[in-house]
Image (cartoon, rainbow, N blue to C red; front, top):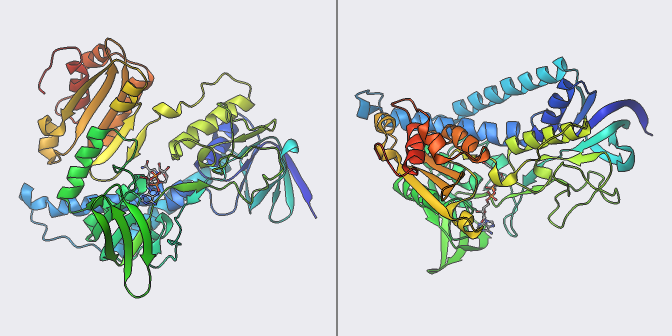
Length: 464
Ligand code: NAD
């Protein structure tokens, strides 16, 4: 039996970054919003992704800092890691952010419905919650997110064959680890684990780790990984997993067949959208053959009044992209003018060491798209602040149109994820190198490297 609870302006299915952003932004615009969430609000990002992963990567940074303290004349002794304490801190951080988010929902009078929701009738924008309640909205936003994907023969057991969800809960540092897939998750975990003391092998199918990222950035990162002892094998075809007794991954690459014996295997070969079991069959909402809900640039599905945002739709699976898509959906619901999200120019931040961040096309992609490209590259070794902090691996690369705007900014190095902010603005404002080059960057800062790279594109250089 279904009880009709209430009619809302907007019903949101899923309380992750896409769903909670739609709720908060919509409520701030005066809409009556309900969010159906089966766990706590925050989604993958807050509970099984960005936030806990970056917290563990911060632990790795503290370890590196203490390990390098002697170079500054500070004798802190050889550092050791108690992962249990770090996990406790991670849980505290996640809890504080979750409570903050729950508080924001409450203060904006968003109704958070505890339970699993499925679409009951898309045309009526109605959702059935596991307790039998039916919620109806003038609009419905689907934001059910994604889960880790695996490959045949590598089913997760949570003990020795791990997804990112499992890895984030590790209480002890494993001895030897194979990471299948050298994308964002693979690189971040490789970085964390090697700092924590594991022996790490990354097995990547494509010719480079971080496929799609600028070649100069990836080569710089790969060199830094090698220096830190991470074994990276690219162009690999993973053949199978021996699970009896010792754990071993068999693979083939240009050198022939090989095998790596490990204590844990991490599978990070991407994520798949959670579009099954949410009542979309026969609903009229289109789902493509990869499971993504089909939407137009305003996040509208094929059913009037039904929208989808976040990892559930094709595009970069990033929390901040979900936020932006949620805002587009709400503004569209409100009938306001809105600029759709340009997936090709969103900011990316990958928190391995050294960090990687970029926005806009790579040099190769810009050339392939027919641009007459000019490039400016500056290494962190030439930057005073980088020398002061002792973090000199990395570069800033600007890809621009000849006599035209900045197209792409690509950074690897210290605090790259923070430094990208002005690069992102330059790309999306279609700034000219001479405009950016004329802006003053405080000295000594890491940000100078971006200013100097832009200045160099005007034909004259300062330091580098
Ligand atoms: P991904 O798509 O970024 O990378 C998967 C990698 O696995 C690719 O390099 C791919 O070539 C490789 N691969 C696929 N099948 C393989 C196989 N059989 N053998 C070997 N390699 C194989 O996916 P991910 O790293 O799992 O991350 C999932 C999603 O989460 C991504 O969309 C990612 O952007 C997002 N994410 C982003 C960040 C960040 O931006 N900081 C961090 C974590 C996750």
